[in-house]
Image (cartoon, rainbow, N blue to C red; front, top):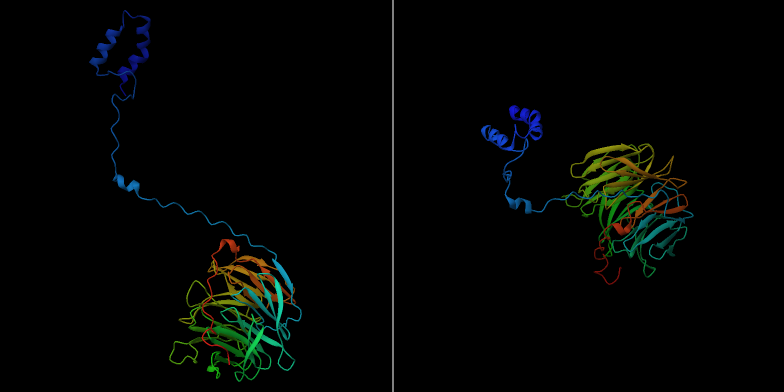
Amino acid sequence: MDFDFAHYMLTQGRKGKENPSRYGRDYRKQLAEAMNMNRTRILAFKNKPPAPVELFPSYFSSLPQDKPANPKPHRHIPQTSERTLDAPDLIDDYYLNLLDWGSSNVIAIALANTVYLWDATDCSTSELARFDVERGPVTSVSWAIDGRHIAIGLDNSEVQLWDSTAKQYLRTLRGCHRSRVGSLAWNNHILTTGGMDGRIVNNDVRIRSHIVETYRGHEREVCRLKWSASGQQLASGGNDNLLHIWDNRSVAPTQWLHRLEDHTAAVKALAWCPFQRNLLASGGGGNDRCIKFWNTHTGACLNSVDTGSQVCALLWNMNERELLSSHGFTQNQLTLWKYPSMVRIAELTGHTSRVLHMAQSPNGCTVASAGGETLKLWNVFGDPEEVKPAPRPPKEPFAQVSRIR
């Protein structure tokens, strides 16, 4: 920075050591004082640098810092079923509902005229009920929320109630329908039934005169019923390609709230979203092949995805934003979708015919699928050790009565 001093140090400084008489220490000292260069090296600080100015108060540094969240590990989805069980005489009928998984961890499946129970805890199989040809075959099964009582719909229009623990018949609901009962849905002590006659009936199982309400809106067979988690809205799908939303809070609860006509085939697959209120997924048959998402408050269709094949059943993942669908021709596969992008995450194959039924375990991890003559269990929704335990079921609907009349 000082060219004169630098030039002297480069050209004359070494000579001073060789000839101390000419450029001695005293001379260099006087020269440095005269030129105000009393230093020994360039860019050297004479004093310590000043302390840095504190831009923020010190107490800010003591506040807890948000640590970056650890990235969620990628979940492995097995491509093969965890277990395969024989299901001979499973009726190949798109409009029936022959499989259900109760809160007591027992699977009920109807094979022709017989209802069998498979306990997922100890892998034991037992026969619950067998019906003669005048009543059968069995056309629908549905567990009550207590996981003990089960409703069985029959081809002769009757619905029977059974105690699965005692293996005991309880009562028969008659007069609801004029033909087979292919769909059932529980809402606490109310059992809703749907028949080939297009009627939907609410039955109070606590009283003798069980029929309390009748819904009329479908012109053909009712092939699926599903109550929302709140118990306030009922979704019904029919062979008339119609999807109805009923609301028991309305002034006229037996009058449909929304009549949705977007599907071009029978609507059997229905699933209420567990993490978003008023969101319903529906799937159409072979001429439709679409999964549609509905805002049941407004009746608006939020999205529609062409799956390429008949949609037989739908299940939401209770722990992730995912949807599982089962299909018919040509691949007879289960497809796992990411919601709301509807990107395919995985496709599970193994069934040799269309996968007509799906049911979910109480902890939400395992899915049972039925098609052809096989029942398969898939660990598709995660490891049970990694998710929260399933909540206890509410109080059983039969607790308030000593017996069912």
